[in-house]
Image (cartoon, rainbow, N blue to C red; front, side, top):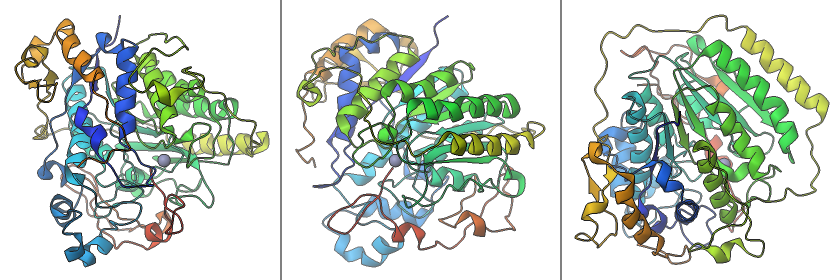
Length: 487
Ligand SMILES: [Zn+2]
């Protein structure tokens, strides 16, 4: 039987612009969306426009001061907030740009809205390619991320699920998510990432979590040039063991595409099929699944990858010859969906990989039973979570946006979406046109994390530790200001 799949997308998201020369381009979400429309994938899933997350939703994790700052700061008034810009690390990698808070509202709304659908059994798989901003901290932007939609979505899932597994295949360590859940066993985080002189600098093999969370943080440090075969050698045995032992009720999958071969900021050598295999593998366990985007800086390949992975989730084979689409010129000269890995050296030797695998399997074997917590009272849904389906019926009347929303989710009919989606296809916006509770540990190196954490009503630790200078010392991409780093 086919799974019920929901897809969150807001056409506004592609308009946001981090600034000239900045490698993070929200336009890639529009390219992805357009490509998957032309592969006719929308017919097999429910398409939702996210309800924007509100400040109250965001402060379930983030500090009030930080969110208030994000809400108010603009390119025009930022010079009046120099102290806060520094305090919240909003500069360079994480610049102030037009519509910054709105951008956060949209990508967060998709992830949290997706979590609510999973909580209520309305969908079995939810996709939000705009989400996955895994570096954001409680009171600090980091690595192109401002609001951590992943932490917020996991907090939402914990209202209905005992154990949530987070998997991160972005090339960068999923530090913001790991840190948030470092001391709890209700969330297990597993991050595969480049380690060694690379942003954000965390994610050591020996960082395994603390207190109740000991062994519930898993870090898989990798070296340059890893290929599909090497990746799979670690990924499948580890994830198989994690699923067997931890038995999560829900899985959140961060599918950062900067681990692909040829990424502008990355140094791995995965093909799209190799990348997608990680996601496909998780679908075989039949657990509610929230699939998010993340990094990815060679944007033609990001769109290829996420369109292909959408197809995988829908059990649809996509032909390699790409259909005509609004961004066809990006995909030349091959106009094929798949990419060829390069001949770069794979620095991950067989011995290295087997050593890492053995070490991590040994750690996993120390977790003897799956933890559970009693639910005394199921918390209320997040306030933003009215799932807004795309309602095609009103499109002709409200044609301004070419895409209107209805709260009547029960009336959803695929056929009625076609006209709206066709309208979207015709919109061409280029990225070179700028448009206008749980813990929460901040940037503390894992080895120094606090030892006496107060436990919240949800059984999850709450903490507030001073921020280290680590995040500011290392940035995500090389630029005029030396180097920067992002998701
Ligand atoms: Zn990344």
